[in-house]
Image (cartoon, rainbow, N blue to C red; front, side, top):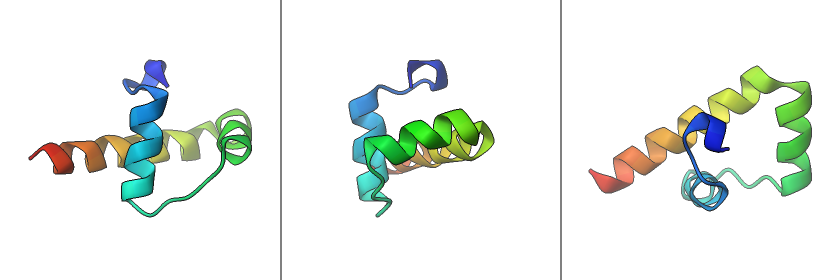
Length: 54
């Protein structure tokens, strides 16, 4: 996650706020098998965090 500019806890918290409930296994599989999709989740999480702080 740090490669994408987020800590794990911030990432999970942002996904929960966006009502995206995925467990660690699914996130791990996604990061390995679908990195583009995982990058979209990371971008969504960053957006959620930016919106929360605005």
